[in-house]
Length: 501
Image (cartoon, rainbow, N blue to C red; front, side, top):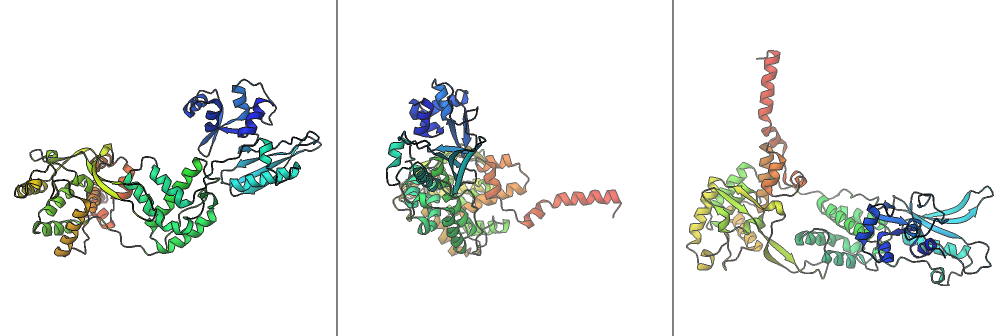
């Protein structure tokens, strides 16, 4: 048997980078270098690179072979071919039928059966399309067995030397998603991973017990149609994006035969949405600061004053140390943050055990020094005097907002403080949340006309998209107020031009 036929029988007409790595016993990175330098010619489809069996054999030293390919060594059809050639060992047979599967950009798979040639030399082929690769492969095996006279109950692939894809996962959606989240996805941090887990809870009752390979677009369409009646648009979108991400991950690793999300879009929620929490108005900020100033615990007034003029994240606030505060320069340096770390997910429906620890800021952009208002500086100095009257653990703590034990203050303790304050001060209509100070700061900077690049540095975000999509909530009234000066100037120029009074 020629080398090219041997490669075709073992890997198919098109060979993946991973299979070439195994065949040549070299790292995948080395295979990529062979492709990049032109030693191997490759085609790319659905994010993966493939080299024809013809070109691989040619690189390994075999001369040109009649492999049913065109001059470039690639299949005549543009689609990716996965060869499943069956050769009968019965030499008395006059004809051997072969077939292959092509993958389309739409996500469907077409089975092609080579039926020979017409008298004038044209190739005859029959075809049948399928939604997933598994169904296509099963049909191809059965059809070739029928044509080649091989009993279907016979283990045809054992005698045919055809390699089956054994990489497809046998796990259910719940098992697969749990394993992927525990292993980690890209650069997602612990809090983001926990967000993925919580967004998957609503879908588990629909597809949680289904095998990944059995889930089709019709299951997903029905599921999201029902979820759209019970969940808000934001929750629905999170569930959609997370499940889609998991299937894209599985398809990229060849662990599922197809990606059912190729033609799906997130539906619109049919549930009335709650009123969105907008940034605080100047009047609301005054109410909050005034109530906090007269509150029995001075910590909240200091926290609110610092947050209003810096817009830092709550985790960054709790990680502040006294060495970061420069009262003369009127600045505060942000160089770390309290982060939540989670243990492995055991039950997808339950939040895993977690603990807080000091860590890096959200990104390298998070390390920054920000100016403080006179009010914030004064509040911090007064807070320092207050701590000097407290027990030694708090008095000698390096943290600006310490716990009773002298460590950084926990997220839950801050939330309890705020809740008691809101109830006592009668501010339920405002809804005091630390993160809204961040939204407020960013929106104020936008309305002040600051460049996005400057706002990005102040907010400590690594992309400008986050600022534009998340933190800015400019109302029509705010937009009109911010542009009043422009329209006043425009009006004056019109008066001068048209001679209006």
